[in-house]
Length: 197
Image (cartoon, rainbow, N blue to C red; front, side, top):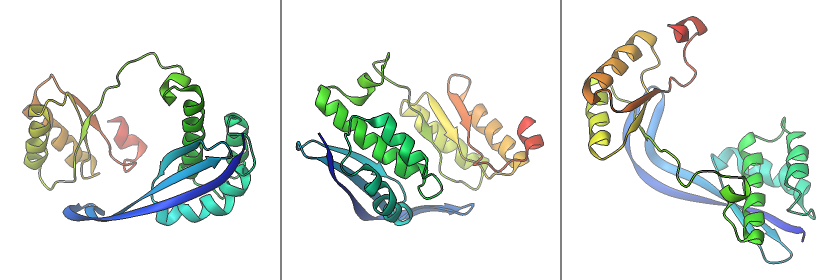
């Protein structure tokens, strides 16, 4: 079996903007790349490519020539060769190709990818995640909506100001009680000393 083609289909769709703040916009026009690796035996693997407006060109220019004609079951060797190009390829490109190869191998084996990787679970935990809000009260309201919908874990994306973030986290904890797992994602904004506090 040999790889015969690699394509990226970019899907665009409009989404109403619903929250703007902290340099982030949720909604508006969105894009997702769908990567397909095809083989000479008619088996194809598929994966998503984030931010295709930045990564699709390098996938076609650099990753595609690296994998063309190769055996899709040589996942490790292909990964190694893509990794050698990490100055030209974003890890999301390498990851998309890797997932396509695993998808092909799963189809060959008649198994989902997680079984090929040696899964030991039948399910995985999931969590809800916040938008950017102006006030601690808005974060509280959102967390309560998720808790009431049955979510048991919640990730908070606060303002990225340590003092304000502590206030937001404390307010959310007060609102949801001790039974909900809370996580903080400060998007790499804290200095080391602030993160330790």
